[in-house]
Structure formats: structure tokens, C-alpha cells
Length: 238
Length: 148
Image (tube, rainbow over all chains, first blue to last red; front, side):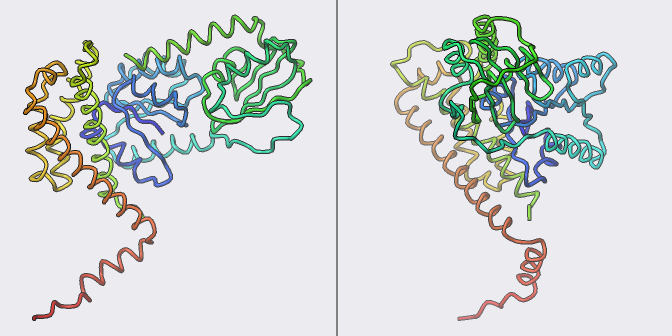
């Protein structure tokens, strides 16, 4: 779990509660650029942004643009308006309130952590020796692997397995035909997988999807996603 | 079992060490004559880290019970290092002093972090019952000191 808290020494009520959970690994960062830098490392199931409602939501919306599948919650120090709630709903960001009651705050944080447990997928094993390409995303990024397969006009199914869950990308004659990751489909799923830096993958030759959710050529997807990745990296250097 | 106070101390010492490391990176950059350009972004980061340290150091050191040992040295570093450019303009004696004081503060905090982690590991191996039993045993059944 990653926590963005600008003042973790003096505003530490939530941190103290989360500390009580021995099974939870917590990393605390103080600004958005550090948060994005940590998230690129991809070890986090969830992000909690603490702060004033407007600023916290702005930061969360910013993170959401770059990490579409991340579970994000804003822990708000002040009252939330209906406008804030509407934006949060639209961006799929959970709103938690920094209530005076310790027990209530403990309850809402506990619920949020439990929701992460239920979302987290485990990297399933079971790689078949007849898979034509097997590897680790630490050495090759998903973009590099897809680029190589598309250039060689492959048809088949890529399966990517990481702590975040499993995803599949179907290729047909060197073009991406269909992609799925959790509830994301098509280009959104490709964009998500593009950022993965941890996990494993394998390719099964000849498996073609009946469904088609991606209609653009691979080169366009590659350029768009590399641009998005650059934008994310720019946030780190700010 | 998990001790709340220990977890808080560990969190505080980790946050403090993180800031001392970042400060050191920028000081080292400032002192590196091979890198002539100091950007405004680096100066901004330096000021932010320095301001965090100024706000938090005294409080954290008091929580860790090492305020008397470390506070003077920590404040000396923060007073000497006013900016990345300022560090570059220090005399060699002042630089040596800055590095010595930084090292003293960092070493003490690092040691403290190690001790707290070791204590956490000990506690993790104990059940709640074991913990309170050992507390009781220490309180009521401690062997009296023998006079020599």
C-alpha cells in the first residue's frame, strides 16, 4: 500500500491505524512525483491520498490518468461537497473521511484494505512447456515483447501474469486484435499492460480471439502508449 | 505481537532517515565541482527537504529519546547548508564540519532504526501472553542485586 501524505510526522492518525495491520506493507511518500515514481515500480495494490478534499482529488485524478486499474482512495481532512463526490465517482476513486472517531476511521480503513485483498490476483503458475515464448517482465517490458511479435507477424495469445492479476492480448497477423485485463478491455487494457515491469508472460501460437476490441494498428498503439508513459515519467521529474 | 509505540518510532525514524539521505544527495551534488549546473528544481527540493527536517527533527529525536545526542549536530548541518549553491561556497573547513555532523546524525539514526527493527523481530516471535508474562516476571520475580 502506498500512502501519499504531505505531513506524515504530524498528520499520522491513519498511518498509526494502518501500522497495526502486520500483514500490510506500507510506503509513505510526501508528494505526487514521489508517488508516481513509486507506482512505476508497480509493487502496490492500492494508493491512499491524504489531504484537503480538492487537492487530494486533483492528485488522485492525475494518478488515475496514468494508472487506470489502481485502487485509489482519498482520505479527506475537510468536508466533501457534491461536486467532489461526482468527480470521485466518475474517476472510480473511493472517498474516506478523516472522522474524529478513531473507531470509525479504523473501520473505513479496514474496509478499504479488505477490498484490496479481494481485488488482488495472485500470479498463477502453470506454464506449459509447449508455449512458444516464455519470459519475465523484469528483463523485457511488455512493449518490447509485443513489438517483436507484431513485427514478425505472429498470431496467438499473450498471457501476462503479475501480482495485479492476469491479462491477455490476442494478436492476429502482427496486429493486436483483442486485449483484456480485469474489467478493462481493448486499448485501455493494452495501456495498462504496457506499464507492467514485474511479472511473467507466455505466448501461445495460433490462439485467435473471436472478439475484436482493438481496431488501430500496432504502430499507433505503440506511439500513443509510449507518449503516455513519457507523460507519466515527466510527473516523476516534476 | 506488534507494539504500537515501536511501530510509530520505526515509522518516524524511517521518514527522518529518508530526508537525511535526500539532503545528502543534494549536498554531494553541490560539492561536486564536475557538475557546474545547479537547477532551480534542485534548489526547490533542497529547501523542501530542509524545511521538513527543520520542522520534524526536534520532535522525532525527542520521541526517540536521542535529542541531547543528535539535535546539536542536526541543527549544525541545517544551519550550514542553506542551499545547494550555499554548500558549494562553503570553505573546506566548513564542508568537513558539515560532513562530520551529517555523518554523526545519520549514524545515530541508522543505529536506532536497526535496534527498533531487531526489537520488532523479537516481538513478532512472541505471543501476547509471552510478552505480558515476561513483563510480570521482570517486575515481580527479578532477582535482587547482590551486594559485593
